[in-house]
Image (cartoon, rainbow, N blue to C red; front, side, top):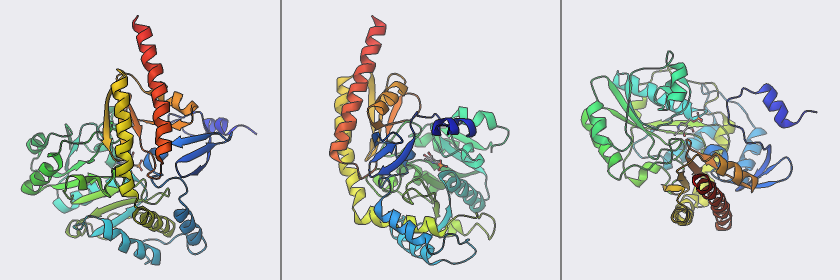
Length: 400
Ligand SMILES: Cc1ncc(COP(=O)(O)O)c(C=O)c1O
């Protein structure tokens, strides 16, 4: 029998930067590899396992639903879907009265773009520099990274203007008679964990209202409690016309959600945008359990509290090491920007039992589960401390 690594390398498209580890089990903030080694997971599958791995309530709900009904197309009503919608509507921004389900973040964004086009009758978009909205063709059109866009430029929508994240007056200058919507991550994830200046999102809201342009918030990564509020945009007290979310919302099962103002969503006519799996009972049962766990276990509050604790510790590392340029983030969505590439730090931490993520070449991204403990955070910080010491030493040695 070939090893798991050999088999994946043999058959799977080579499109991921692979860590040389086979993960086989997870509970809470910890995952285990096939050799039985344990890791504290500050990557959570790029933000999916926000409730921790295999949250017991989610596992139980999935088991129960499996016995009952696994698939139910959107062309039929379904009990668990209706139940989830009722619960979800209680936590969505009040103005967002209608929901469309899909299976991923990119799909949630695709739907948002189509809804905006249909509602406004226009096809221009303004997106942010360093934005990340996914890699399907529509989402890719509003994703900034040239390395993702360039190979497919013949295929993607061209009426998109990119503008610096944080500069509302530039957005206003770029809005023209073709602009359907402005799309923005309230906290940029993939682009390096950037929080906007305090007046940015309120100013965007005001500009969009005045110009008759829709405002789309992509909370695929920063939503669902991650930043210490249910939705990241609540830090700035503004509401979007359309909200996209995914990743963590179903506790580890694929689910994309596009929520819109009722009037905006109603621009989409029957059959204009559907998909086979959206709103399937398995995802709905998992999402209902995930939402109940998030609220009843007060995990959003925990993200705020532990996020502040974590950030304080990271700021100590910033003062200690010149290789650290900046520590950023909100709640348990944190970034440590280095003056050098982060790959050695990530690989070094992995060998010491800590999973970290990158965000671009120079930012270590931390997306731990909200159930992480202070002791686990201390261990992560200790490992980062050791890895940064090694990096600093190597850089000093190279200079002298
Ligand atoms: C803000 C944001 N939007 C959209 C996406 C795309 O989500 P998916 O990978 O589920 O398609 C991501 C994924 O990282 C994301 O961070």
